[in-house]
Image (tube, rainbow, N blue to C red):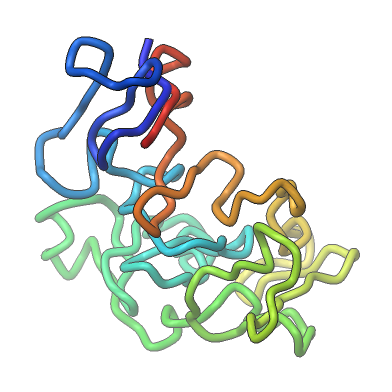
Length: 197
């Protein structure tokens, strides 16, 4: 019923958009919830994507806390902090851990000099064809071992599976609106309001 995005919080079923053919969700807070989210449920972000073993935090790609802590503290709560859960419980030193070793990119330790080993902005080259001046992390076709994994554990290739020539500079589950990547209205509304204007 509402597949056209009309704001950060609303999607519309058809043009022209009116209040009666829109769906909206602000969520419990004004920012970064409801329909104002990216495909992974975090805040909308600049165009591009992270490597598959990375997560977005504050608009920057970091290696996933779940990998760095072997699942013990999977929630990133800061550039150098991983926690067992979300919210105020992370104030407990028993549930959170802060380390410079957590402020790394997903390419750290893979032996490939082209992958980014430091935190970085989402890369356009991971969602569309190569853009001049954009750092282009590439993955080897072979599987690799993360630094914290045992010899039996492997991660898939570094690059996310994307349609690279579809004109969408966001993750395939996202759409560009106001210069940021948001979760697609068609996904958020289960096809009832798929237009973001």
